[in-house]
Image 1 (cartoon, rainbow, N blue to C red):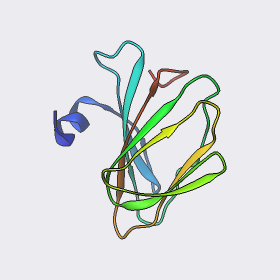
Image 2 (image 1 turned 90 degrees about the vertical axis):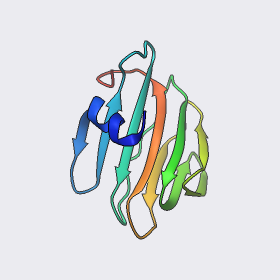
Image 3 (image 1 turned 180 degrees about the vertical axis):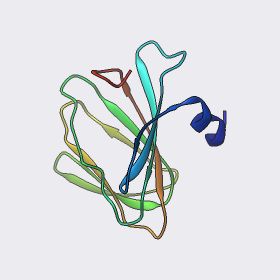
Image 4 (image 1 turned 135 degrees about the horizontal axis):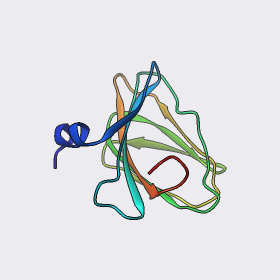
Length: 111
């Protein structure tokens, strides 16, 4: 499926001045596939998962991601592994939207 179809099938769970976040869990028993479109010069709130690893796949744009004590530059095509327990936060440093997938185990209200 392409991104347009994904957005039609997924649930838009956040839509504000910072970002749009779409979660897709259909046909996935234990995982969530989430698309974030982070607006120009904005940052995610940041968080950590005590019991789950997470993978970020950057689609388009340019920015940085804080993972634990590291700060990494990212752009479309980059893959970042976030070990369980590491605080992580994404910052859009490009000229447009920074788009990325995050893949993680289902938890709480992220079903």
